[in-house]
Length: 84
Image 1 (cartoon, rainbow, N blue to C red):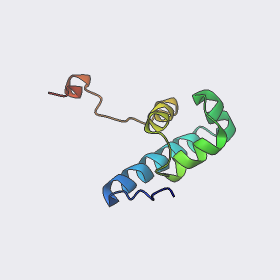
Image 2 (tube, one colour):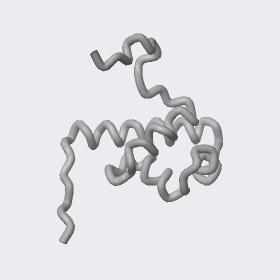
Image 3 (cartoon, one colour):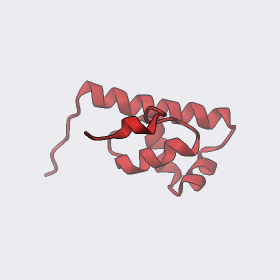
């Protein structure tokens, strides 16, 4: 039997915020779910999960979709991207 994974409220809120930003940016461009999914190389059901902020979506897919519609993921100053 599979265990149900629980996530912190912070993680859930972050996923929902990213999804809402992707959805808003897609709508501002007047792109359909199908069009953005095609541009990002994913299926429409996966895009719908990203836009809903579902925690079952692979993180890489969510991070791949955001820039396609112009959603900034991190601070624009790339010098601040250091892990050190």
